[in-house]
Image (cartoon, rainbow, N blue to C red; front, side, top):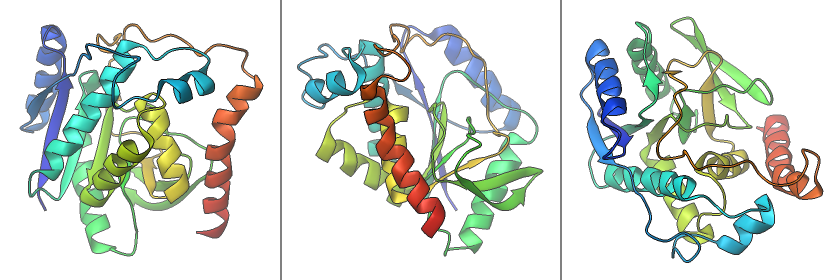
Length: 244
């Protein structure tokens, strides 16, 4: 099976690029750098829905958040322009250990041997211990169906069907949330997101240059609009966990 590895990186983030390159060299992976997008406009960007974002989040999207979503979109478009079977989209805050590469390789082999396991995307860098179903052990980690897809988008493993589905979703709905939130919306509905109990990709936890202007949502934690954001995800995740 063929695997495309892409790294999102801002032109000015040379130290983060060097750090990520050292990680890839450590595990023997070749990667292609994708220049992160810095949008010229935000509120009037043609791929963004400002009214819906404000309604859900009680604030305006930050330039870094929009740039991050557009950069992930660019990577998926690049992936689908190739003949690769799978693609990992990395942000430049990742770190690997000796089990990272074999875990991902063995997971893909297992999924290839089990075509009945429908999936679209695997979160490699984040876990969420609610509304999930363990499927198998891979290199000491549990590969699981994640009805409520984990947040953070630092390392996402896609198949072609999943990439096409998310691009179609962005085209139809426009960008109305940070990319990890919007991906969770889709995968909670389709029930085809996956993750590991122990993520095979670690994070450096260095503040991202592309998302450095991100701010918290307005309102209190239990604000009714906060519930309005979460209820569809909870509802679909619960439905899928009960019936699939």
